Length: 457
Ligand code: S3P
Image 1 (cartoon, helix red, strand yellow):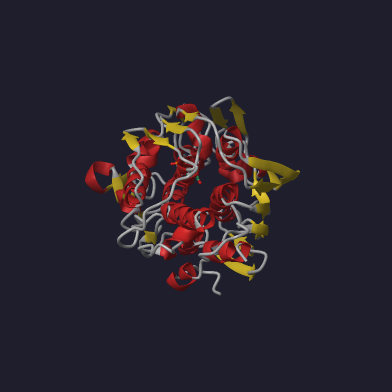
Image 2 (spheres, rainbow, N blue to C red):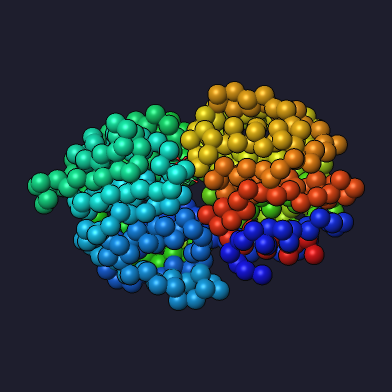
């Protein structure tokens, strides 16, 4: 079976799962850290080794953009995800549009780095990415003296960077209070700020994932974090030292297996090498709060990040779960799969303060409501969240046609897990639902179907 998801290996998913999911799985590399390891390696001339890189479409978008900007990025060993990155202090002007594909992290973080490099560049992506807001990056960068322009009054990609005439002059400083908790926006400002001649301060409304801060500090940047205020000293680009990276497993990929294991009778899974950065563990804690049997083993620090193995055993979920704005950043990518858990909850799942979900690869609140609706689920949707009444006896209707995947990997994976859970809990009603585009999982988890099929044997 191919490690890249195809329509064929989606249809190999089992319909009979008497033992749920069993066994061990090494969780593929963290997408956020993989992007950053390639980007930050490309800023220094000494070769940097990355081990455990996620070989997914989004990460390859970053790789391909960086190659166009002059970096050499080569795979040394596919099995361990060992790559060598040799960068340049001064990037070259790309001779073509930088294609960011489906990846918000690629376009937004690279907008910060390209601004610092003061080169002419155009960035664009697929139909999903080019609908997502870019003004949230263009506006704060303008305060540093950066000129990114974008489609529809500087709101959308394609975006173009116009170099400053005084090329030698450093960028200015900024004290920016962010209106939304977004690691991508925070990172874009800090990355441009590496090339600033003055102090750059970013204040977050709520803490978002801090991989950029951890990694820049490891490279020797003078960066301080006090609560939700991050301060970067002037002229840090020139002080960056090469640093090798060991990428932990992605908790956002582990999330799908965690929910599958929690809901499928008999399951006993060991998810190995899962990143446990406190800004990423929201789903794990939420599942524990409703009684999931999830325990941590072998906790350790890998590449400056907390990591552990996650043991998940089936146990029925009970209790009401209410999540609000302060809870969202630590599970911002996990809400679609949390909804699947909520369907089987003996209780109510209520989520508010999650309006950012409407601006992800799809409008994830609407996407899940629509597709779950085709399976007979009614859920109450609000502008910033939803209420879902769970039922341990829930049986999905057979959909009349394939379920739409909304050009969104996490929607496709959540709907797949739901399908397996249904088959495990209700063998008499078992089926494999067709997905409009199962290959979209390649964006973050190319071995997704293969992994599930392996654990179901
Ligand atoms: C990411 C940040 C999050 C997350 C995305 C990856 C990152 O987006 O949803 O999948 O790598 O910084 P926001 O920063 O827009 O919340």
